[in-house]
Amino acid sequence: MAKVFIAYASRTNKTKKIAQVLKEIFEEKGHEADMCDCKEVENAGVLENYDILLFGSATYHGDMMQPMKTFLFLAEKANLKDKIGGAFGSYGWSGEAPQRIHDTMEAIFGMKMPAKPLKVKQVGQKPENLAPAFVDKILSAL
Image (cartoon, rainbow, N blue to C red; front, side):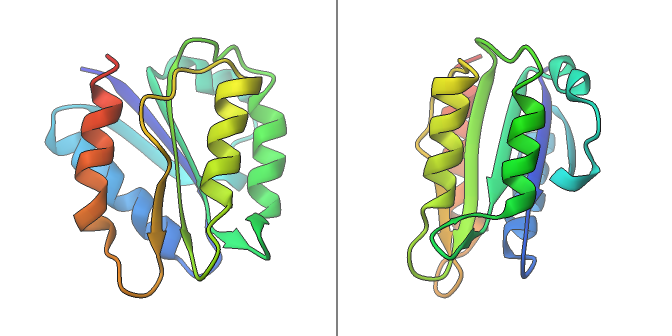
């Protein structure tokens, strides 16, 4: 059983909804999953207690939200090298945030990123339909 940590930055609760769906799927598969708004994390060291870390942000003006940027600077202080990671987020029309988070986790933190970022368009797509394949890809790295 893996310990999963899911942190998100959400503007209209769409990205929070994705985080909730991901948490439910991991728990249904028998894993322990914790989820929180990235603004709630004050100590980078707590991230080291997890096997899988998922970070998500809505795309706002072509970028991730400022709270996620701040969180990533904090997370950089933790030893996340070779941990399994994943990035996700919602978007209206452009959707750059999940890829930027993914690239940071892979290139800066040295994490294993077995899945492409999970990007859910705010209109017309449901996280319940897209998240299961994303989770399976993440779990394949265990």
